[in-house]
Length: 487
Image (cartoon, rainbow, N blue to C red; front, side, top):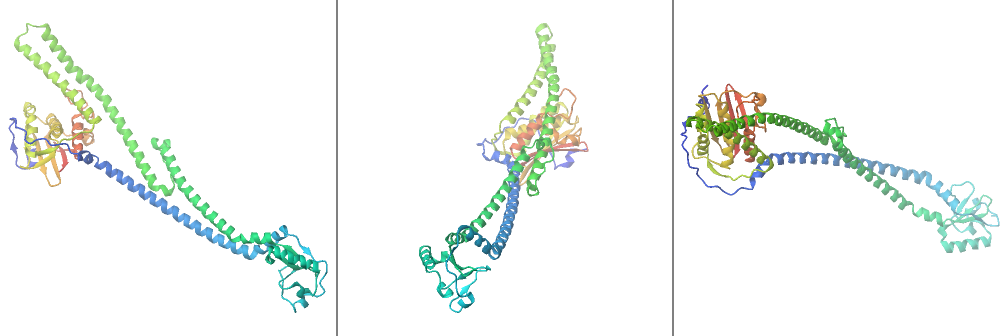
């Protein structure tokens, strides 16, 4: 299949060194903001969901409190009416009887109450054996005990006539008692009712607040529940449905992270085995050939040059392997500081192609670039060349001999798309996402490749530091790596 059929007309690149143009500018503070954009979006989404959960809880608690207040107000009003019309008189009489004593006159009345109504107004208090005299007791009875009446006048002048209850007993005698304590208690009826009503309101508010605290306690207990880590089901009230969904997402993330950690550990363990072979083999060769050169000073010049060349090649493999480890460790432990500059896209691709020209030529592979003229990219040219170089090196390694590797660029108003396409062995769909992870190698055989499975991971770190993405697709014998960078 002809790779060029996928692109615009191409141009060949000579592998002569070209001078790098442009000068470096100061690092820009928005680099890290671009890198953290997706994290901020996720945090904003979580904050929005938390706000929605808070709004729902507040609405339900407020609605519940209002209903309880209305119910309490209705019940309290009904109790007040029942008390006033059914229990107030009875309870008042009992209180008065318990706190005061009747004093009777010594002389009986000679007129009946029916006759006394002609000269005075008499009101009954509802009891069968007594009547309350509301006017002059002399007019009601015709005559009475003068000493008793003098005592009545004296008591009324001291505590007020409203605090002295004057009654006509069943036997016709006058009776009086001090009801000042009863009247004092009666004056507190409305304040006491207000206090009781206020206490009910306070109890309702406290219960509502306690209910909200119980929600938080349940949420805290759910977060502290070992089942959260173990993946067990956490049951929360319906009011905390959004929090329950967030906990389920958290559990999923925990499981994904644990699975990723296990896979990473497995790949690192496999890498140790790879390195044990990949480092030992060239190192043994280097030591062997150098020892042979040291022990055989009479070797022909041609042999000495051959052995020295082999030792140098093996040493370079070791250097490349160690360099990858240092680089991925540096990117992993420290933030990638970018020094961006305006770079000509076509020239940038030509320089990357030129760097791998000799390597490609050794395998009879040609490198072709396709890029628009006079288009600029604001990137860290050094680091992006490292990222794209790792992709190109991978493409050359797996391309068929005597085939073509194509580097292309598409520049729009919003983004820059850099693509590297090679014809050769396809990458299985199961490996397309994993190839950008650290320590991943699709080829599990311990061959002669110096690749430690870090090159594409380094490329992803650099691309993401620029706020971009990197991906791959492989079908019909063609494999394409695509880097997308925002403009």
